Image (cartoon, rainbow, N blue to C red):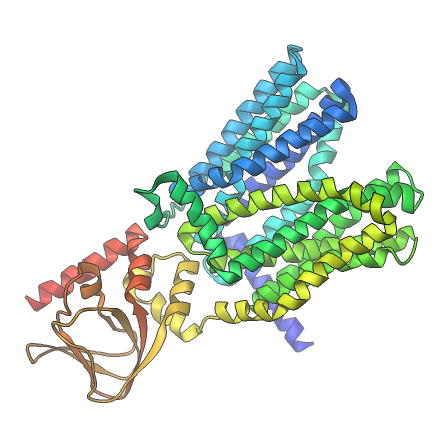
Length: 550
């Protein structure tokens, strides 16, 4: 019980950190206005399409919106890695608000319905950069890894609530006013999101990426794919996300089949079953808030995916509405747990310069797999019957997840960071301005090097291949056998040769038995040169040191 109490206290502290972080507050509020307005607008589009062309028109509009967003998403995500992520989100909001306002005019003017359908597709396309940019911006605004997890929990909870509140508000406005008026209200809501984003004070640098210059858009797109398929951990996470959303697509159809056929209910039963997953999602946010700070995100992700699928197989064992509601509540818990832990983990293991593109590819994969699931569901029911389809949908995820737990555990081990090493790097002046996750990646990349008393660590005139920070012991710096200084805990050396691409400018040898943290050349340069404030600080340090040795 004491461990649980400690974790609850830690979780409260993490969420308090999010609340105190003014920029994160603005980001989460903007997301709330965006998601609620998006869902309200979607309901208005569905009602308009149904009135104009019945269920067929609703299906066609939905297909246009999902497929268009899925195709465009990887390209739109490039914006998040090339430009100011906050500006990308603001532009996405403003373009959507403008398009929705134009749709309101079109409906009022009684123009052909096809124009409104086209605008709905364009609104979906304009919205695709928002989530990748948000996913890439969040790690740059947090101050600790735990705060990142808490921020993702808040974002997921907002999404779960938005799925309820948005349609409800859309329905109320439609009942009280008209489609055109509802469009105007939702356009205002999206514009408010842009205004909130304008209040974010921080201007985080976009990390430099070597693939961005000469090779152009094609190389940029491939860089996101290479980041996924070139790293087994990222590929596994994206693959399991895709499998989960495929089952989610199946579930969207199966819920209606279960309610109307399997349980012999009515339209109200469909609503209750859908609501159960949403309520479970909100409960899942609370559970995720407690779990994400433990540092076992990959295992939590696997558990979430497992909980998303297994209850569906159990649903086939007993025809009971109460039983179905309880199991779908568990599905909702699993969905939020997988979403929060999976997103946080991807943000932590993906190179900062590629986060937007990786999330763009992920968004595209999720949109397409959920559509595939929805298409496959009727065929599955026809082939296996309702119970058989539930078992097949429910068993798929456990079959994929259970053999993957060993790899998921290794991902958790990979993301573990030695706190003493992290603190040492945090106090190096030109690392201080790095985003927390970039600093965390450096700490994971750093290796401990032991140096015995009298041992030469770097030799004047030799090529430079590492940057060092003193963890224990004392070391002397000499130039032409003249002693320059003594290095102690927290001091650092080796940056001149790396930044100026010159041979070592001094000799460093251990006065006592010492332990050093060493960063390889590529890791050091990627971190420092990728952020303008870090590079400026490092160059200032180099200038001072060279001036003192002149």
